[in-house]
Amino acid sequence: MDHLRLYLQGDDSTAERLREVLVREGFHLVDPREPAPASARIMVELEASSPRDTARRIEDLERSVLELRNLDVAKSQFLTNVSHELRTPLTAIVTYGEILRDGLLGEIAPRQREAIESMIGSCRQLLGMIEEILTYARTNAPAIDIRPADLPLDEVVETVREMNASLLERKSLRFGCELADRLPHACADRDKVAHVLGNLIGNAIKFTPEGGWVQVRATAAGQPGWLQVEVADSGIGIDREHHELIFREFAQVDASRSRVHHGTGLGLSIARRFVELHGGRIWVESRLGEGSRFFFTLPSMEADGAPAAATDPGA
Image (cartoon, rainbow, N blue to C red; front, side, top):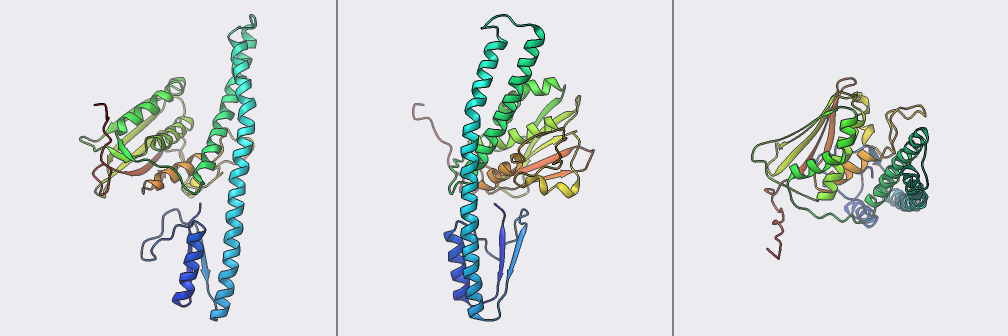
């Protein structure tokens, strides 16, 4: 969800009423003395000539907030319902396609096998998009379950690399992982960090031509108790004017029907949501034609308030 900054001129009671409205509707309020998040995009200035005018404007704002909240809930529910309805028949198509491909219903010709493989691949691509939409709908839930724990980053990187091994081999891409010496473990949710790394590494593979490289690095961040993870590639790069656009929901740098690279435009939006749930941030440094470097930060086990590592009761 976009960040909303309000500039209000009025007495303390009016400001407190507005705060109650926004908190009730699920908005996260930031102390005005704190700097605005890098992702803030919507600025609303509310001015009024009299207390009565201010009250009326707040009532209008409350109605607008309620309408937007209801629309957001309806959108998420619609995406969830449609995605579930599409996933079932697509899964059946993949299953029957694999039965045909493996010759369980009789021998097939080589050209028929190629056509079936193409059909299965396209269905799996659609299933991946549907799963991304479902993940997006879940991230918009009022409360997201996040379970920080002692997390060795090298294990997560290796898991994601194994998941993408066939794609790396198909494009002859070199993959490297470099972790700083004596790097502390992250204090983070394994599944959500794996999702973030999976998205960033998957994008690096997708947008890097054959024979290129993908590199993952992890170091201690400038702030004590924090780690910085970088996913770099030698791909096509991103124009500076699109650095913020790519993190928006359903956004595509190339939105034309003839675009080469397809997707839902939700991956980086979900990644940012998961990183921000850990209190971190995510950003990109890139120039068109010069590759990309994506960074995100996570708390380490040395951070204040980090939970103690879970111990196996059977140990």
